[in-house]
Figure 1 (cartoon, one colour):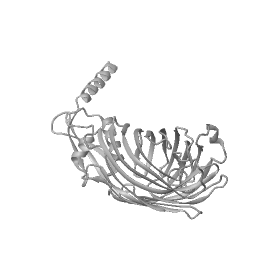
Figure 2 (figure 1 turned 120 degrees about the vertical axis):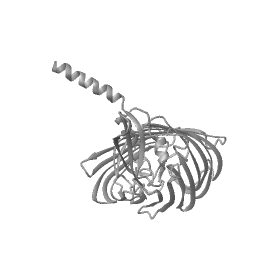
Figure 3 (figure 1 turned 45 degrees about the vertical axis):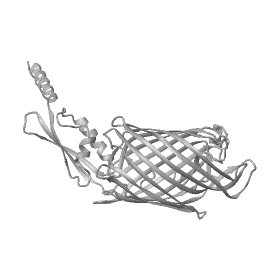
Figure 4 (figure 1 turned 180 degrees about the horizontal axis):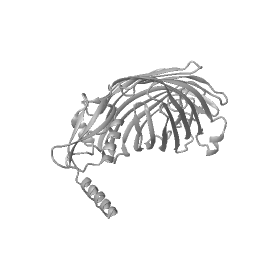
Length: 419
């Protein structure tokens, strides 16, 4: 009889819980971020069933937004029976953020990029801004990104870039240096399938201009080249990361596929794709292990203008600015971050890292990955100065030292974590 009474009680409680409804969703603590925006992207709505798992997914999504430093929820009974008010409490980030990246090696290479971005334009979590870059030549870009412009699921991005750099071109065991310009216009549609899966798809029209400056020459390698191209892009992201201020835990995978076509036979059309696998694990109250594995492959054309490059800013800290190129790449970045000091809004992190990678030579084979001339291994140390209430306000400095043949060493400065 006691068991029957217990079963009846549990069944009654379960049925009653199914009847709990949301009376209203209220947003507190937000100033610049619009309440209507939070309500638009939340799955919790007035009249739907009260479900803690849905609320927790909303909170995870909110904590990923650039405009929010932290978020949590509360549930209180409403006036009517079996109805509840849900409160989303927001701690906002300051979102008008300068950006800065500086790269240098022991070969006296020096380059920098300065930018300014607003990550919460109109209180709608819209990103707008641009950057100026000096890497021997001047470059600039303007970016607009509104992932929730039309709904919780649908948005768009527009990008313009005029990028000019001095690029090494490798052929016949020699090197030539070209002035390279890339002017591009890009339009992307952004689609959020659900909490963990999103897509980007669109086109990029760009013009590439190569102008020989100095170094080796070859009759088969043009000294001047200008070509118009069209790039079709698809990005798929699986994101199950959970943020707690500067700490991250979980897994993310980002797949990027591009098809580039042109009418100029000297730079043939090609396919390129790569996937970044990222894994983050908390250790105790202050430790955070972070890793990124990039696997990339492109059409294996015999061209000195191969798409994958070895570069300070992209993959190997301390290696230099574009020191090699390839048609496939394997790169692993792994580091242990530890909070050395934390008080109020400020946190100081130290990190120890290893960056390692290898590349397939143009028209080569996969055996190139094991060629000692293509392998780069750079361990190093770094510091992170973190403002916890300003989005991406992480000033980083890393020093990488190569331990493979003919290695360099150097400092890499920047805003935001390296990955």
